Length: 299
View 1 (tube, helix red, strand yellow):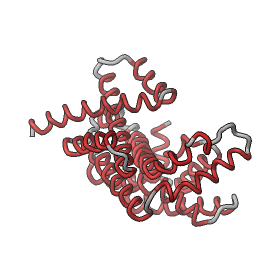
View 2: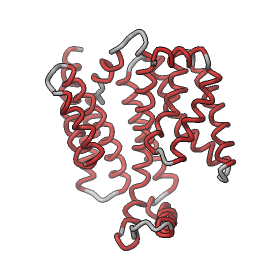
View 3: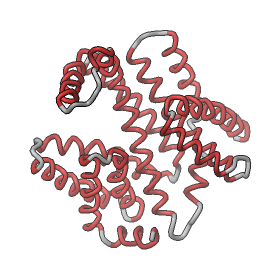
């Protein structure tokens, strides 16, 4: 199936436009887990054909999504912004992967871009709590109108959500872009190079410099109460979680971790996300540091 899909995308870029637009509509109908799917298609087109073709597919799908948003009663600019968010980062990372052939470099660049993004958001739009509080309050009122048993005002969640949203938006952007890139790479290598993506994924790391920066940011967030520092720490936690997952898959491939434990990790990521994210980030930090030191010594 994957052989057919990859070759079909390679030979039908026009159909890829409509597929990308269709996948982009899924999150609008309550399938939030599907946010990374639309970006994987133009990234695959970049890897299979060329960056130009990938851009054309993303541009065509953006027009379709903007028109679909308009038909659903939302302004066309909203559709274009949404398209830029779900398609732009995976497309850029696909170009980088095509040029470098390194998933490690893609992760590192994505993290650095995320840091720049969150700094620019704080610098350009100021206090996140002041910026987001009206939107979160409107959301809370809408939830109450729909009969959902949650009082964000009384529970003090409005201020907490507003204060942290820039960070969560950035973390989500980076993770969705990387997930889309992982899927595109898997689609690309599955037909003739089965197992290559797994081997590449298992070697993911941040490197010594970003690993040290992650430790400093996380420690600073525990010792201070600054929204920007907390947001940067969240971004590094998300990246280290990915490195931790890569380490878990490598341990499984080497026979040091049972397959059931690997499934258990993913189940707990859904059922006990805060604990598992912290655990995987800690594993990712240690694994990143040890392998980065070995890489530096061998170089």
